[in-house]
Length: 240
View 1 (cartoon, rainbow, N blue to C red):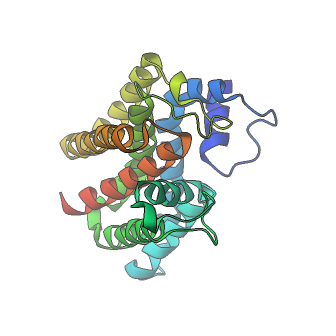
View 2: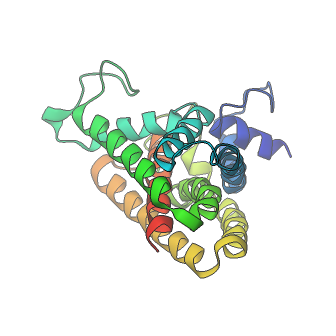
View 3: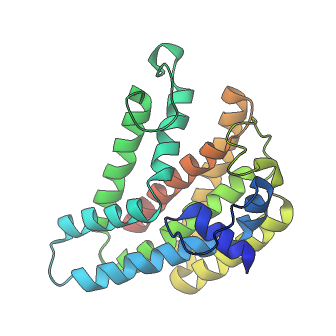
């Protein structure tokens, strides 16, 4: 139970689960519950969708839903996305300092954030009958991708005050995957499994790229891959 509360506090804006600051190793051990936290976020999105759908056009509702998701996660994954892409940018395009969205945001980071948000807006808008399963599963798939990325990765030593990437072990991956796939199959059947496959390939490809370019995986890279995987899941649910 404590691990679940630590996962909620790490991944969301909820201030209430536990007042004690978890050690980075403890956060890594809670990774098995990351998809479950994603399901919680998805439930919030589905409830907001059901509440506002009779009153708002789909274009406006998609903006509202993405905004709710951003606030629910403290915009931390978006900040991690920007920082990661600035790291991967050619040296001349990197910001001089800083790792969060602000005055030092680089061009690559800004473009990554804009593209991901635009994809989410449009995918949710055109999702149609798949909207409820997509809203419920995409956040869970994004948080599962964090575990897939972290397992077997070498830590760069950055952001170790938040999560110890080296602490994500096979046990966490197996539990997270089992939990995720059960939910995906029950809710979306074969389509959900196909989406999960593509999300896993994105996470594995990202791990390879990060090791080649940056020498390993940092905590902020987990958030970046969660954001990209979530956007990919929304797009796939809108198109499959």
